[in-house]
Length: 331
Image 1 (tube, rainbow, N blue to C red):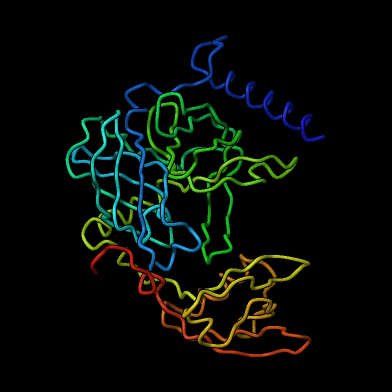
Image 2: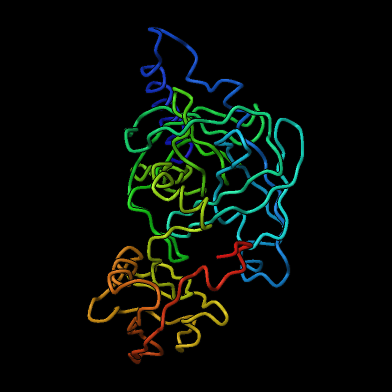
């Protein structure tokens, strides 16, 4: 069944790409110019052993970034650069150092700047909001051979287990392997998204794998803040420090970050979250909606959990996640 669905999807993608091609009867799918692909660079990141994210994300991280100005400013996915102690950029075959400029947990974007101009033409920012489902695009990692035509198969809400949610993420298929920080490029050669994840349900019916991209329109309102302050000036969402999964119709805490607010309040792995305040929750989307509706970071969050058949109510004093991490940014 899976191979049959795969062949069906690939045939569907081929038909849509052909229909979207500007030349009637054109056989080739849309492709990004070599100049546009040169704006996609490789990142090699080292994180110190004491970094709080080292256990979950590793100390050596590799991924991609996209050059967006002539002075070497690069946008990437933020988890690559969290708590980085050193960053190397590879652009057009040349390697140089880079430093963290900014990070935004609420969108997931990270910014780094190369130590000198990279000698590649920046990729202009497009409009992810105007891109429709079934539109063709190019997903590009570093290297001209690491780009492929894809289809935007969905634009929908996304909730991650690490206290992260986007109102409208972009989902593409077929998947690319080097997705972290990859560029999603529209047929006009503009950046419309930055790669975040490999997902099993980019297309939900029938289910088919692909990638999740963070829409570039989410960067535009906070770009000036990230450049000036290293973070968005908007109030941060309350962060508890829990990893939560949907299972058996409920929400199970599978991990509590050491020294995080949730641990200090007494939450434990294995607890089943029943409600936030008086609001019952049974999905990640409902959980984050309920927590974030209480106020900004610093808000007290009442959590009712099921533990060994007993209901327990705890109050978590939330924090700004950035205050918990060693991001390499001075605020």
